[in-house]
Each structure stands twice: as C-alpha cells, then as structure tokens.
Amino acid sequence: MSRGWTIIVLSWLVSSILNDHENNVSCFVIPADTTRITTSSGCSSSMMHASPQAYYNYNENGNSGVMIIDTDERAERDVSRMESWAEETAGIVKSAAVQLTGIPDSVVSTHMDIFWYATDDLAEQTSLLQVPSMSILSSNRAMMELKSTFTEMEDAENLVVTLNAKTELRQFYLMVSILRELERGVDSPWYHYFNAMPRYFSNAASMTDFCFECLPPLVSKLAREERRKLRALTGAAIKRIPFLTDETKYNKELIRFAYQLVYTRAIENPTTQDIQLIPLVDFFNHNGATPNVYMAYDDDGNCYAQTSRHVAAGEPLTFSYADPTNPSHLFARYGFLDQTSEAVFCKIIPAHVNEALKIIGYAENTMLFYSNGEVSPQVWDYLLYQALSRNNVKNKRMFLTACIENDWNTKQQLHDQFMQQTYSSLLQHIDTTLTLLDTLETKTQNKNIQQHPRIPVILQHNNFVRQTFLRVRNLYFGQQ
Image (cartoon, rainbow, N blue to C red):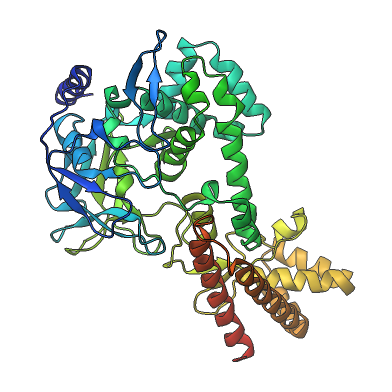
C-alpha cells in the first residue's frame, strides 16, 4: 500500500478509537416509510431510534455497552453520515461528477432504492471511486485472521461443511467478520457504513413459507437453495464462534442482516477469489444489458471503479451482477426483477440431467425463451431428443452423434422430419406453464400483504415470465 493510503487508513483507525461523533452534522437520512429523501440536522447516528431488533451488548459485569445497529425493516438509512465517513475517515475518493440518489422501490414504495448516477457527461475510463484495501471487508482477510487466532473456528467450519455448505465458507467467514464489527456498535470503523445499509430485502432468504409456494419451478429451486445456505450459515455454526456474545449468537435478526449484506452486496475479486464488501461500490445497481462501470484492483488490493463507456449526465451507474440472460437467478439471490433481461428460462426441468442431455446442450442458461418470442436452439434440440427417445432409438443415436460432431445438416434434417412433434410439445409446455402461473397468482389473492410483503415482487416476476411465454406462443402459434 502506498504511503498516502496508509496515512488515510491509520487516521481512520485512530478516529474510530477516539469515537469522535459530532452532534451537529447534516445527515442524509432515508426513512424506510417515506417516499422521498430528506435532510435533517442535529441527528446522531449513535442515537438511532430503538426498535424490537435494536439491543445492547453487555459486558461481564452486566453493564450496558455499545448499541448494536437497528435491524428493524423500518429503520432509517443514514446515507449522508456514511458519505462523510467515507471521505473523511475511510479514505475513499469519489469523483465530483457522481452522486447518490434515492427513489421509491418499484414494488414496495415505502422502501428506497439508493444508487449512483452521473451528474455530468463522463468519458470512458473516468475514475468514479477509489477504495483503499483496508476499508474493504474481506473474506480472505477474515479467514486468515480468525483461523490463526481462534482454534475453535475449526469446529464452526467443520459444521458448515457437514451441512453441505463447503462452497460457502468464504461467505461464512465474511459474515462472522461483519457480526464482530456489528457487536462493536458505534465503536466499529464501519458503523456509519452499516447504518446506511437497507434492512428490508425481497430475496429468497427473506421470504415466508407461503411465498415459496407461489414461485414457478426454476426460481423455486433456486430459492430453496438460498434458504438452505441461510440455515447452514446462520444456525448452529454461529453458536460455535468463540468471540461472539450470547446476545449476538441468539439474535436471529442481526445474524440475518449480516448474511444479507454478504449475499446481496458483496462481490468476488476475480483474481484472488476474495468475497468483498466494498463500501460505496455496493451502491452501483445491476444492469445486464448496458452496464457502464467496471472494477479493477492494484497490487495492494485497492479497488477502483471506472466507467467502461461514455456515460451521459443523469444516467445511472451500473455493472452486471450475474448472467443477464435469465432474471430468476438475480431474483432468488438479490430480490429484484431485471426487466432488461433478454430471456427467461423455459421452465423445462428434467428429473435428471444425464450425459446425453449435456451433449445436446441442456443448461439453465441455454434453455431460453427470448423476450422477442424466439426460442433458443437448445430448447428445440431438447424437444427433438425427447421425441426421438419415445419412439425412434436409431434416430436418437444419430442425433446425439450429430451433436457431438457438430453436424448441423443431420440435425436440421431430423428437426424438419419431426417438426410436428416438437411443435406440439412446445405448445403443450407453454400452455401448461401459463396455467401454472395463473394458479400461482390465484393462490396469492386475499392474502395479507403485511404478513407476506414479498408477494408483490413475486407476482411481478411471475408476470414477466408469463409475458415472455405469451410472446413465444404468439410468434409460433398465433394469437390465442
């Protein structure tokens, strides 16, 4: 790390130790129950209103300690204090041509979507943010520190592995690191950052059991996988962490908050495979179609966000979180619907994906219905393979060989020969799925939205799927 960055980080740590909280700072506060951004003065982030989810740590003598962050879904988001913290103590450098703004969530209007946008025209490769490595919450750093300091971490890690969540160990260590900072309350260097985070989430990890009953096949499978990870990482394994207090170990809301920060806001450094929560960078929204931001790192691990193309004034600053061809993965993990997505999964889910299906190209990111009504070649190949499997073993083998050898002419001959069967299968599948979507929508009627507040975004997702399926039906079979 360069000397300048080192001085910045040291000053940040010193200021956190001194716990110098000004009492009269103009704060950009985002109340969860408002539809506009307000600015108030004289608000102290250490004096946020207490809710059922806000509690105090207790030391060995039973005396109250620092206040843990308020995790109630209605809690205010103190964005202005975070911005001041980022610039003055965390060493984060921000371009003068970018600004955070907030608009009501497209589905739940009482919650705010806060994101970066350009205030001026920006040329390609314009620097937007520079975040020093020591300001980044890192899974690799947490693993190295915690495993070398606390031998008991091995027990917690083994339990995570036993629960079939070995692939989530990096996320687990980052979550534990966040919980340790949350316990410190206002004494944590990241307190103002945490206090600007959303408390309301719409992803699978936040859904009720009834919500799961309203999901179509693929997103239902993805959502259950998200819930499995939630239970593996936030249950008994947390009880094994030696340095967390009992108040934290048994505070489900605080643990879920830490989990949500990791799974909805952290990104992976592609070079080091480090899962990182990068302050301010996590306010770039997703855009799979036309992203305009990319991240880079130097040898010291400092993060730089730059424009990847020309950006017009007023344009949101975005990058792609995941595969842009299918919104279901984004919906299950992050809880939003990517309406710029060019396709949806066709909802054909075989009981077992054998080697033959892999040969013909079956995969969730290839079996697609496009927003213009087209069907991906892999869907047609799957339907043909199923038709041949029922009554024509010889042609089935011929088709598989053609797929392996990329013999397009043979494949096309078989498609032409069995077109009637594949078209019939496609129509049947479309109509079955549309009927299912109607059934799922009917199920939500007369349900209490207060008890199941994620129903509106589920219906939005299901309707996006319905409209895509209808375009496919209309293109190939005409208007109903």
